[in-house]
Image 1 (cartoon, rainbow, N blue to C red):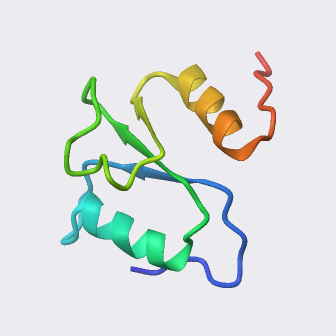
Image 2: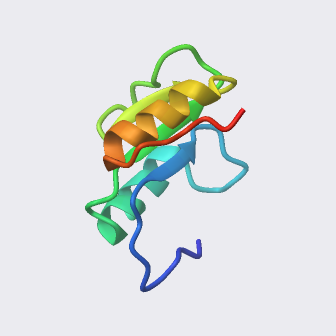
Length: 85
């Protein structure tokens, strides 16, 4: 997989179900190695965080909950996120 190089990453959003030969936990391990300071938010259509992702996730949001995602990003980064609706 190709990851951004020489960039500061504040937060990572990772979908649990991927159309990839790698699983989400495998990608999370790679991301932790490349960007150790960046928290990973797991997104899924499930109502709970999958057990195999729990060790790698700083947070979990069910898909279809954009306000929860914005609030979690704000919490993890310390940057306020405003809803411009």
